[in-house]
Amino acid sequence: MTVLKVFLFVALLVVALVFAYYNMEEVRVSFLWYSVSMPLFLTVIVSFCVGFVLAYLGSELRYFSLKRYRDKVRKALTYLWMGYPKRAEGLLKGLMSSEDMVPLYILSRREQGKDPGLDPTKFKEGVAETYMAEELFRKDFGEAKELLEKALGKNWNNLRARRMLRSIYFIEGDHQKAVDLQREIVKETEPPMRGEEEKVLASMLAEAFGEKALEEVERLPKTLSSLALTISVSEEEKGAKVFQKALDQGIGSELLALLWEKKSLSPRILDTVKERTDSFDPDLLALIYADMGMVERLEGLKDKVSTPIKFFTDRESCREIRGFIKLWACEACGMEYVAYTPVCVWCLSWNRLKIKGGRSYAHRLLQRDSEV
Image (tube, rainbow, N blue to C red):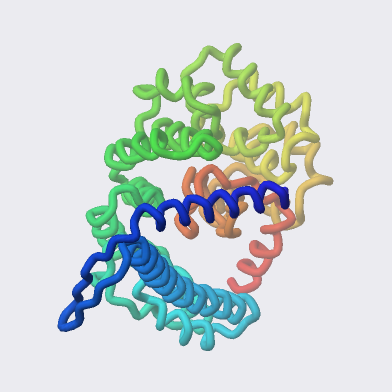
């Protein structure tokens, strides 16, 4: 390698000397009020050196500017993750000319319990509106929706904004808008995440349009909503097989609860439940049996159900307390629900509700009774 470098250096030197030999004649160079005569080869070399130096200085200045920017970002992140949001806010405020710093700035203010405190009209990419909407949607869906629509007016490629907006549309009952937006999201989502977005579309279609959307739903990945739809419109034999598969996949309690809510429990499914009682939450079974007047099956659960549920296992009282018992909880944020919904209204995550289990809500009922 050293020999090669020496050879290249010598070759370049020879080329330079030959070039100088054939370009000894002088040329006159003028700049402003100055004029000088010099050999052509020297003029070329000086021009090259000056151009190189100017380019080097320009790149060094840019590098110095980027280095300062990088150091400030790193310092702000360090402050933020170590629990000093006020210090982080001070640094990030000076970097707000770059819109990609907006989320971190909002996070630093949120850590202090402050509002975002930004004027989104100063930014062009819609990032500011999106993150401000994330702060606001729990308080005011309407204002969050307006911010997201403005964000997408600036930059339609903002998938984060589109995902939030489709969820708000769905929650507000504007199902067609939500579905249309979700179809576009599925097409543009990167492959590793596309399957989850297809599940969102399946749940939307099943919950919003039911049997009318069955053909499209069955081409999409399975969700609780789509499985419940398939069972409710299928023959009893086919529905029981679908339920059996869901049970083998560990989502039997969830599907059973959803079918109960939708009044789609068939005798075959109830027989499967009886055969595999231990696979289901006992409090859920007690409430279902009480609601359906299945006294004999209810008797076999007395030693398994939580204490509060024992007080509500006759048909009338079970129906009275349906609105108080929160069987469901979101895996993502912990929000509890009386009835199933495919989208959590607190964190906007999809298909994350699970049956909590009787023990986790038992003391709530006791507390409510003691307050009464």
